[in-house]
Each structure stands twice: as structure tokens, then as C-alpha cells.
Length: 156
Image 1 (cartoon, rainbow, N blue to C red):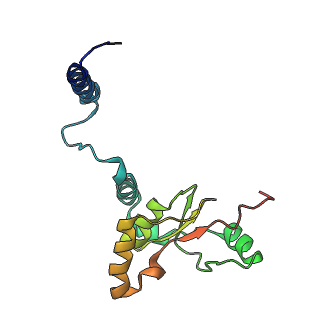
Image 2 (cartoon, helix red, strand yellow):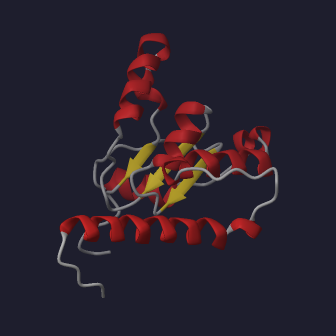
Image 3 (cartoon, rainbow, N blue to C red):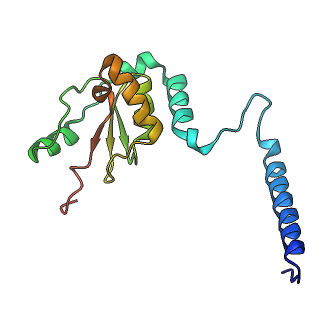
């Protein structure tokens, strides 16, 4: 610990410490990237992951997936909740949280997604803006992924 009497010395010492720490962080991971890799913000995590999913599996394959959503559909229907009866081409995002990945795949790419998570859907500001823009064109509400909370009750 550095004990200084002057606040100016303390501020200067902190600036040096922070700049050295940033430099160490940059150098620590310098060899982990190829020349073609770019470092992205953590806010783009869902966008990057959805891009990887589409590149790995292909959009054609993702639209042809036949995923049975009987468990989710039947449990929600028994409680009188919203159900999605179309079971062809469903991408199920289990523990999807706020639904960022499903939003990327459903709204931006037109894939059918469903999120299963006990937390409610909470759209970010940019997602709301995008939906408003798309609603004027093609009904943005229909494009939102189905968000299932109904299977999480006291029996779970």
C-alpha cells in the first residue's frame, strides 16, 4: 500500500497503476488470437454466438430442424398459458436468460425460437427500437421468440 500525503500524488499513482494494469491485460492475451480474430465487446455475445451457430449448422438446416416441444407445450397448455403449436423448426434455448440469443435468431434471422427460463423476458432498448421499426413493416410482435416461464412452479 502506498501512503501519500498529497491528493495529487495519490491521483498520479492511481493513474500509473491503472495504465500498467491495462497494459498487462492486453499483453496477457496477445498470443491467444490469430491475425484475423477481432476482440468484440461482451454486449455482442449473443450476436457473435448466433453467427457461429448459423455458420456451423447453416440456416437451411436450422429451419428444417424438427424439434418436439411437447413438454413445454403440454405443461403450458395445462395451465392455460400461451402455447406454440408449430413444432417444426423450433430452436429451444434452455436457460436463455433475457432471451438475447433467441432474439438474435428469431428477429434478425427469422428462425423459430423458444426460451425456457424462470426469469421473465426483459427487452433491451435497442431490441425495442428494432421491434418498433419492424412492426411498421411486418408485425414485429409475431417475430419475438416464445418465452416459457410456466413450467417453473412450486412442483418444479
